[in-house]
Length: 117
Image 1 (cartoon, rainbow, N blue to C red):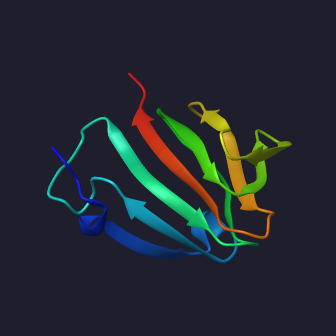
Image 2: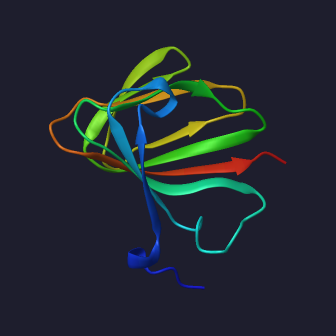
Image 3: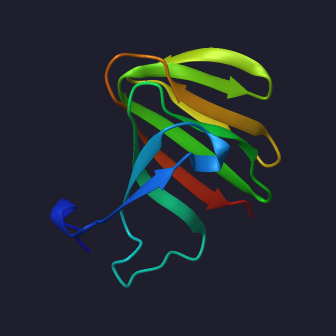
């Protein structure tokens, strides 16, 4: 199966998870008539400068962030850490996290949420 980027569903989310600004989500499979029973999210997320995804946790799943462009700060269970292109963040079941764009260019990352076995 090939999903052409031009055919993917894009959506704007205002203040995602009670964060700031507007995030753009480009869904790699959602909206294509395809579902993955163990994947809750597979998307490219873009945060403009100053935007953030607010603190939240997941239950019975794990989330991965793969940073593609820009720089920012994540809150990883109460510990703030810088992130930049090439970094990967793993958020396990029940852990709390948030991400903010602290740079001057868009922060772009892939977000994958998979159900824990």
